[in-house]
Image (cartoon, rainbow, N blue to C red; front, side, top):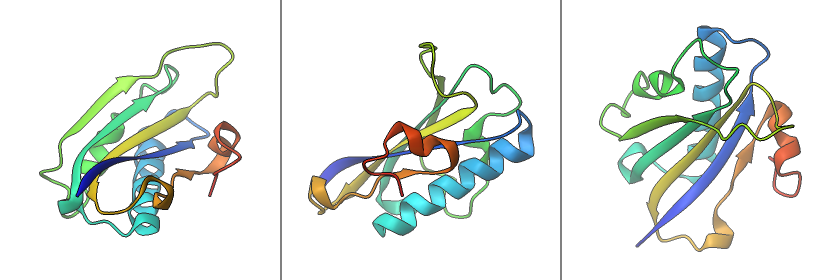
Length: 121
């Protein structure tokens, strides 16, 4: 078994708690669904946001999901390189898996699809 990183990103229209939490939940659910993993398979989740998102910690959404209470989470600010995509939430999900790197499905939703159009799903 190997630890693999699964990337994901999404955007929100507004800097408000309900929207940030919903977008984070939607992104994580899509990542685990597309990669057929369970919370028990997850080593940790690293979460970043752009500096224009200050209304909520995205990790709060993950912590409230059933089965995710014990998964280690960390939030941080994305490096503010200009011009970068605004109102963006990024996840790096570290997962124990037997899958090869090429079998991992990264997920980019909403306006974040522009970050990786080659693999956006």
